[in-house]
Each structure stands twice: as structure tokens, then as C-alpha cells.
Length: 184
Ligand code: PAN
Ligand code: ZN
Image 1: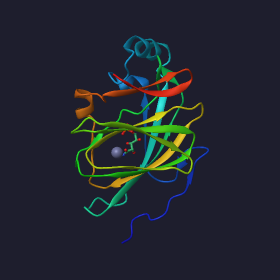
Image 2: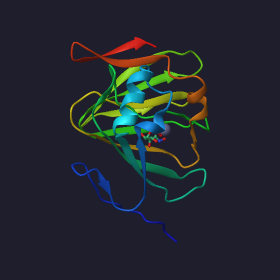
Image 3: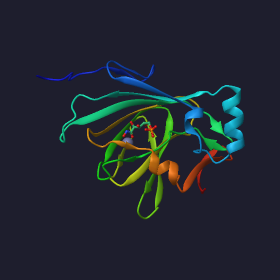
């Protein structure tokens, strides 16, 4: 039988019919931000919701695809823009396509073998291809919610432990009001 083949999303309310919604607060991102004192102070003050992902997982076989609608709220922790945890796919070869729907964001990509990093814009009408073996983190560099869809192989899996052990080499900070890629 066919699984659920169609869903409806709304980029203004960042909702998607069907799927499982997972929320991440600032406290869930321990060790991610450079400015630990700023992170701790904000966690103690209000522990804000940073992002939510609603994932649709119609099939789990090798040829299947999963996708998720993400909403990443704007803000900064110290000078660093609000971002997702970031991960590698457990199946390292698994690539992903990100489609920007609303807001002003960027994808921080890091080739896990060479450590080479790049920052790709993610906004309405942009598509970012994340190759296999590439750690990826989404960053909101604007002042409104960043809304996007990511599509990835059903068997990709999410490896957060590798990032917890060795964080991304680069950080994205606000310099004179503009995003700037810096060494950690
Ligand atoms: C996305 C991410 C989503 C949240 O759907 O899972 O942006 O980021 P974290 O998983 O790093 O918390 C994706 O890349 N899926 O593979
Ligand atoms: Zn991914």
C-alpha cells in the first residue's frame, strides 16, 4: 500500500501536516556555542526555544526518502548567531538537499576529512546541496524565523556524537552587523 504521499506546509506559520515535531531549546545545545558564559546566562534566564523540525518518514528502505520542515528562530549567543546542533549522517555517504522558504540563513558545511569549510546562503528561492561526508549546521543570520525543508535518504541517520567530540572548526559571528566566518 501507498504510505502518506502528500503533505501541506505553510512557510509563514512553519507548519507541516503530518510528521513528528521535535523542539530544541538552548539548553539542548550544550558545548555548541563559543561563548559559554553567554550560553549559560541565557539558559538560566529563559532557555529559549531555538528551533523545531517536523519530520515525515514515509518509508525506511534503502531507496526511501525522509524530509523535514525546520524553523530556526533569530537571535545570538554572544556574537554567534543562533544555529542548529549540526550533524553528520551516520551513513556518511548520504547527501541532503536543503530548500530555503523564508528568512535569511546560511548552511555551515565542513568536509569532515579535510576540515575545509564553507558558508552557503539559505533563503527563499535558494537550494543548498550538502554532499556526503559533510557536517552541516543551519544558521539564522537574519531577524525573522528561518524556514526550510531538508530532504535526505531514509537510511541517512543523524550522528550528533561526532560533533559533540569535535565541534565545527568555524563559527559564524556578527561583525559590524554582517555574518562573518571565523576560526573557532
Ligand atoms: C535536518 C536537520 C535540522 C535540525 O532536517 O535535522 O535542520 O538540525 P539538527 O539535526 O542538527 O539538530 C537534516 O539535516 N536532516 O538530515
Ligand atoms: Zn542532515
